[in-house]
Length: 113
Length: 112
Image (cartoon, rainbow over all chains, first blue to last red):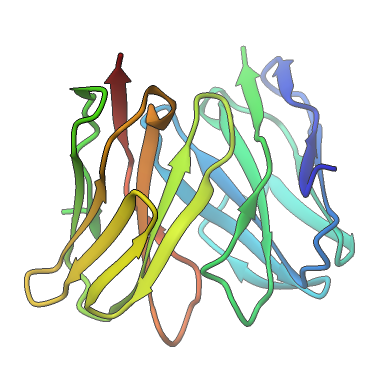
């Protein structure tokens, strides 16, 4: 029974396309996150939602738009994909009261050609 | 200088060795210190976290924090090939943004 799941696992697409990544957690957490891990393995926060409300929005191009239809789901839509968007995108979740204990999804490996 | 520095390795050790993984940081406001393990092509999973200075032990793993030196360590005793993974340190202040700042991870290879 997967705690944090992401779809798709792999995504290969061309520059200029629009794509979405979906995330779901069944842990009952109230907070969800999107991270980007680049080729050098740095893990950087992009967005954080608490109870469907955006609370963290790091310096991310506005081509990236997160959406949280409910507190168990957090999707990421990316417009006009660029080569530099190639990375692994991780979704994570936690209770807001215990942000040290984040559970990560398996990642979505995005390759933009 | 990055806020959290971590040598990417790889660190290669024989099975049974004691492994020491380290991070240094520059932000004296960091109070929570975490260690994550990430297997190849998987998401990070939390191993343990500590608050402020001191040691914490969990089985073969010991986390150590020295705030005066801004230096944290993770020790793995009796290392196993299954410990081969990338280990990421992460840390955050107690107030303000609760989002951790991650190190880039150290790749550990334990060979039989």
